[in-house]
Image (cartoon, rainbow, N blue to C red; front, side, top):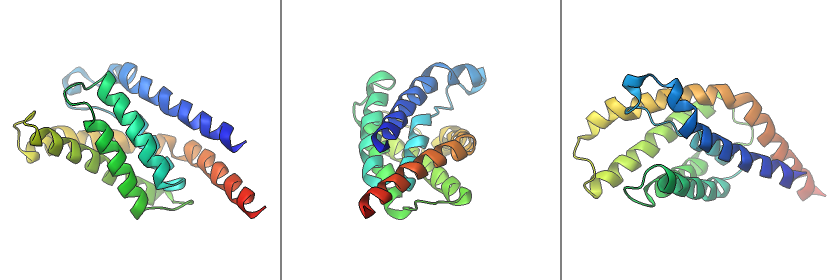
Length: 177
């Protein structure tokens, strides 16, 4: 049962990955197309990191970050993989809670979104792919992304939390048996 639920979660991550590149651009106004880059699968990975464990978040962050690198952003292979894996793992270290309430999860989403985009900005600056100052990136890209991620996290909080609680409850009952 637990493995089946985990497979459903991974399938959900793939669906979110596809939706963020196909459906979401139609929902974003034309003037904001270059400013907002939603990472819906990353938000779901943050939920998995907090409710399940940081190692799952690290592996899923690395895998889906690599998918982001290969499919969408080919400037540097590994930038998204590194940023998603590292930020998921760090947030899993700080915020591990099998029953995290809504305010805590929204704080995780905000910090995670800021951390992901900041790591990406730092990586692109290091390799001189961007020449803009951090304040410009913060105002034009990072804060709009945080807003979109926050709204999406509010929308998926209840159903995703229920699924993850069932997985952790099933795991704890197996370990006690």
